Amino acid sequence: MRSMVKEPMVELSMDILNSLHRSISECVHLLPELRGTVSRKLDNSAVTQADYLLDERISATLHAHLSGLQIVSEEKPLPEGSLEHGWVAIVDPLDGTENFVSGIPIWGVSVSIWRDSQHVGSLLSFPDLGMSLTSGDHPPKADSRVSGFSASTSPLEISQHSAGSNEYRVLGAATFNLFCVATGRLKSFHNLSGAYIWDIAAGINLALEQGCAVKIDNRDYTGEFLAPSKRYRVEVFFP
Image 1 (tube, rainbow, N blue to C red):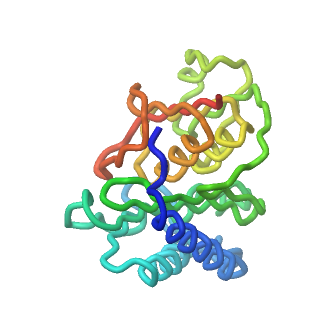
Image 2 (tube, helix red, strand yellow):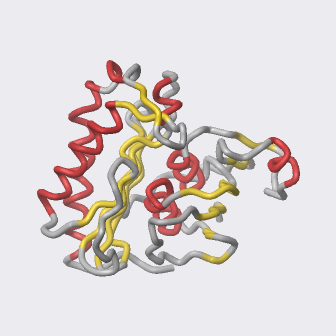
């Protein structure tokens, strides 16, 4: 497992992540009135003005700290330049939009910061639940026997999968599933149809930091930068 970049980079990343938490907190009160501002993307997934507001605030905070930063966001076109060098942030400003629109509090904000293809730090924030996980945290761990599956998984796929548990949940937000595995609230999480890096980058690297095993496309994942142009099959296991 790769560790985060050493000092002074760790101190810088902590400052940025703390600033991001403040930026998210400062606009949370504006979000409920935006639940009804739903439109549909080309893939028929939902997006709201809350997604765009959070994306704007997060991007502004990141650019204020990091010169020359490139942002890979679910709500932006992919950057045209190489992502292998320099600062890169991978952002999902509102994961679980269908939950958010429906008034279900299981939705989250995901930010992962990289430099020269090395993970520097990540955060997951769940404002409606008052929960978060940030690089460097040492959260208390539960001991669940429940496995989580992505919402795109069919009942047949779940019934045929050897997740190691007869108990399973479909929670509707990859970020929250990954948070739950990292903190022991789920025994494992399985996205069999594939997810983009903005869905998973922060969560899988925080899971690694918490000692979890991560498999990407059926191979052990140890913290490599993943290209944003494809979907990845993801499975994460609590130790």
